[in-house]
Length: 156
Image (tube, rainbow, N blue to C red):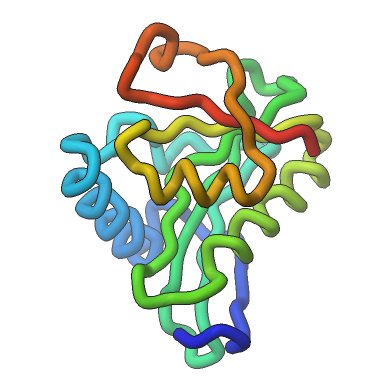
């Protein structure tokens, strides 16, 4: 996809076939980069009223990427967590569009900040998030003491 083409982002069922195609592509890419697919960090069945799963498509309807939002910790948390962010490698602007969409949804759901974790070795992702205003935050849950992970966040 070339820059300037229309990108549509809509909520979708993370367990649906289109979502699964993108989640599988993401898992394969992460396995190549990190040695871990990341599948264990996301439960597609764990839908929440303060979150969602989003698919990006081009004008022809082709799948371009995905991202998920959920509360970080308790359901009434002031912090949202970005999960399973993926943009097709041949796309341009999809990652930024998805990130902006998830940030807007997070604000709409009342989150004051958005946090995420990625692997340190995934330098492309770390640089992408830094470019979009994300900075290191305290690790949480399974990421505490995990030297292979970096936790990033942004105040909304």
